[in-house]
Length: 598
Image (cartoon, rainbow, N blue to C red):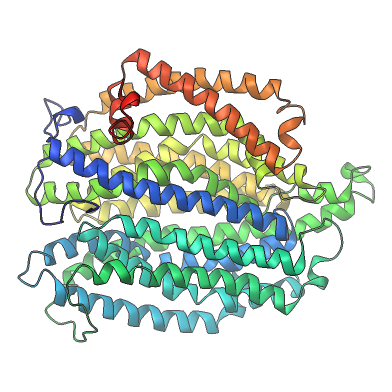
């Protein structure tokens, strides 16, 4: 079965009625069916991958802790390759290339020559960049961490030498994935990370068998061995390698006859380069900030030790268990875990559909069909409201048990869970705004206007940098993770408002009144469902250190029970409201489960 209609098949998005945005129900049935099928396949792949990612993260916390020194050091070395890849070329691969590949697909050879040369160029550039960056692992770790001791830097560099080669394979995965997307094959790109997570879970399982689980207390750095480094860091890199190479299977099935081709004259790379230039600046701004934020938060790793010592030496921490005090301070691992949780609804429900709608936006704007593009924007934003408003409230209610799942299994797991839960509450408040502004940005990329997103991203990046580093002067090092998630949430709201104004100014209204009405109605339903869920969690002892805090298993059970209660209440309320977007959201499931349609 095809994952979507071929990229060359035209579609006719619904046109607006007065505002330039109409109800999704007016879209042609074939387009809606194709979109639903493709987005469902992608959402399923993303969901499975994210679930496995959660398992990987929870197991890693059991293996090396979640608010422990080795966890933060490994997280720094394992996160930097992805950020550097995005800094170098991620934006070009993920956004700029799709319109160019769609154009090339109209050639008599279906874009074979263009795609072959493009992949060859990308592989050569990423290989060269990866080699240089890996050789510079030691100074990079020094530059991107704050106040780390020599032993910490030595372990971080050892991790980096094994993880930095991931940059090349991230690049291969991205460019091949965009070739597949441009040819209407969306599923493989979203399912490939499943293989990565399976490999990573196997590696962590082997680690637990060989070295056991993390135990609070003691000198983690002194006890760390080379075998642990190779298995943990090398195993995670192996997962990225598998993720990239597995895409060659669906790529070969396109029948394009791709092979290495050199010589890039006449490919139109000059115009692509201009577009890529704006996108590179955009990605550089965002990812330089990510690196600097990680550097700022890394200071909590060293501060954690100092505060633990202070707990036994008088002062504000006197009388407290030093190990528990240290575990209650979130570092980079805890921050990334909280972000992983809050980005799940976006990845499953927004990104999958937005990726399909992006191709529709591109085709509409290439035909100068602005009303059709605005209708697609409105349809997407309103469809996103159903899952995103529920997810935001669910995370607010379940922040504690969710944090406990990823707190590990040591004696200080509860303290670690509380720290992660606090970050979750701050991040959850910005979730709908984050998804909405990312989707609005795609309208500009679809029209090959990368200049405006660049100005917005550079402005937001500058604000992040100024606010974070100015506030860090007055705030203690242990509080950096709390500072950053607060800044993230605030600026997600600002960025959405900014993009909303720009879209209306350049393209017209996308039915913003309808969109706002949908978010208000889903928000009210989510709050009522949240109240019901909070009551159930309170009865289970979730707010008093009871059953949900006993172990990872009890936390999972608690989240499942509360989640079911909230889901039932939420969907009954939306049904009573006769919300049209509920039918759109449940459409793919209702076609397979007849009873659900009633």
